[in-house]
Amino acid sequence: MKTMKPISRRSGNQHLHHKSIEYRERIKRKMSAYHRHIQLGLIAQQGLLQYLACTMADTVWMKFGSWLRTIRTGIPLSEQVTALALKHSIPEFFADTRNYGIFKKFLLEKIDFKRSDGIKLAA
Image 1 (cartoon, rainbow, N blue to C red):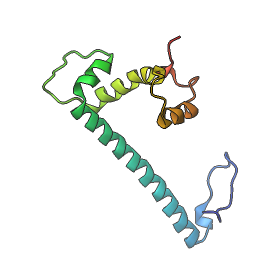
Image 2 (image 1 turned 180 degrees about the vertical axis):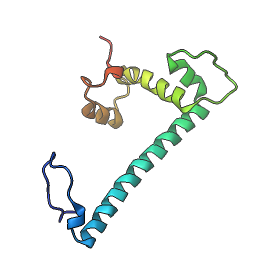
Image 3 (image 1 turned 90 degrees about the horizontal axis):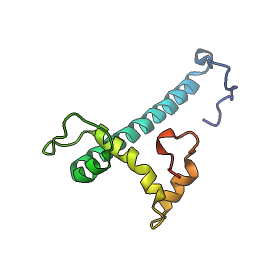
Image 4 (image 1 turned 90 degrees about the vertical axis):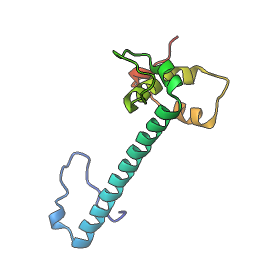
């Protein structure tokens, strides 16, 4: 879409009905690619949460750090419980200095700790 005419950020609509059919088709193709990218990311996230819920149930319950009325150990965990356990274990992940791999370096460069209320590290 290098041929797209740049518009200012707050200008609103591009008025695609004034553009050629070929241009409109390229816009549809671009938007479709964005949608597929987002959907694949969500599917991957859901799959990872389900995998962790099934294979790491004891660890997830240990890191859950919240309250549920009933914790039934024989029943598979939900994705929400697993996601909360991951959220609560992030400060511990960053505080562990023994393993300082590429993934941790990448995350530390990308996360803005001033905007991330739930993952502030304790002093």
